[in-house]
Image (tube, rainbow, N blue to C red; front, side):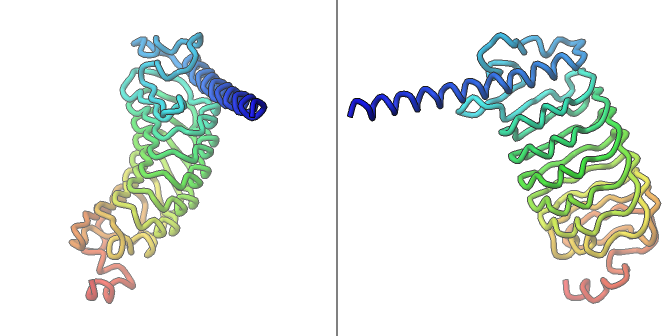
Length: 261
């Protein structure tokens, strides 16, 4: 019996040590990120590496296991790059870094954040392509990257984000076609792609979300798209695009579906 109690005590100690080590690792990652940023407003003053864990830092939220689940630094005046190390914060659910002057590219390692719910990097100075790895985050509900300087295509892997509600990529320099795979995202409510350099036509799979999905706004204005629609009037959906057709019902292949809707 004594041996069992001793073993249980050792196991408890090891678990506590593992939790402490994890917390320290997360603190190290965030502190490293702090050093990579310029912080003219001194909002990161509380990010002290000497503390046991980052859960007492301002703008950081932890769960009951003292693991970081939120980083809230919207409109904080910070500038600099996003480090790839952020992809090691395995319990992170919310990255709120909007309205700053972040530059450089979005790390591909953010695709490792398998518990992420919201990625808000809008209104920054980010460049380069959108990582296709983000399409592996099945928990993601809000992906808002608008008003940056992002280039390249919209990843087709985003069709795997079957819990996504908002995809806002407007006011970048994205090019190529709108992926037909986005038609798989039946939960999508807002799809904002306006103000890019997208080409081709709007896939029927995407337009189908107006009729059979939950889409309430589709904005594809100010692109280089062919044969796009102006407004639908279906399901209260607001379709904002370059004028060509008067309604989504005028789009080839949709007249019969509209009569049935």
